[in-house]
Length: 375
Ligand code: 9MR
Image 1 (cartoon, rainbow, N blue to C red):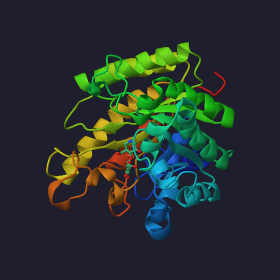
Image 2 (tube, rainbow, N blue to C red):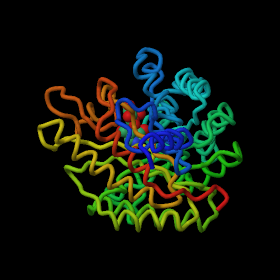
Image 3 (cartoon, protein in one colour):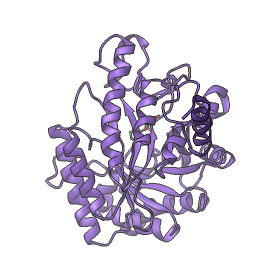
């Protein structure tokens, strides 16, 4: 083929292919969502409404990279229900409006969680009878899901239900106010209520500490699988499991085969999967940011390759998008001394793409197609 013909066919190919392979990261106008779309998936990030309002560069970056967003904190009950029955959804509304204006999907995080609740809730639960205790939980599912029906398509219904370190033989998180008030059946009640409230929504059980090859994660995986056995046995309407995906490669490694086996067990229940809070804690890595970026990217690629190899794996969402605003920079276990920013997200503090961006794009590019919704 003559060079001119070759170039013409390459241009024609690029025009019909969503993303030309190998485009340089910072000049490509293709965001991670376009890379995800190749195999029928989505890419998203957790956002805060204030950042969308006040930081034009961040807002533009979210619009460029994502086709899904989730609230980093603005749908948690501590924010939305400061007084019993008095709601403030202003932050979540702005995020969902942003998603709609940009043709993006929105997730809802999180309806029932042991943390980030308003201070009045636990005393109210302690003082209530059984029926009122259930209502104290289901009232929020009702109000939040109705408000966003048709606009939020998937919900983290119950977040972080297991914690074997707390000492219960079944590995359930016994410090959770919901567990104390209602026993494990709080999960059944929450999912049934969610299904009744919005029958079209995809309902997620989400948890962390499932990713690494460590005794801690092994106990957590076992507890989650046993919980799912019981829940599925009781016909609880769970559609999907969200693996949070907070990697910490300088503290715990992960094992590709072990992770693949675990994901296969989850999808074996007929459940969909997502990585809902992906990031990589770089604390403890080499002092050179360039070297650390390369190592972080390589861990991320290995992890995402395993995750995306499972045909039930749908969306990948990062917990934030830019290092300018990562929770990792403030969290005691992960933050660097001296105010240095953590580098665990695909964009750096200047909103430029990093090797981690390349890793996510490349993992999407090589991912096999996902299982269709009806399969
Ligand atoms: O990143 C979130 C931080 O901004 C909030 O202050 C905190 C409490 O609402 O929650 C953080 O997000 C957590 C998520 O909701 C659940 N998984 C762990 C996340 C990081 O702590």
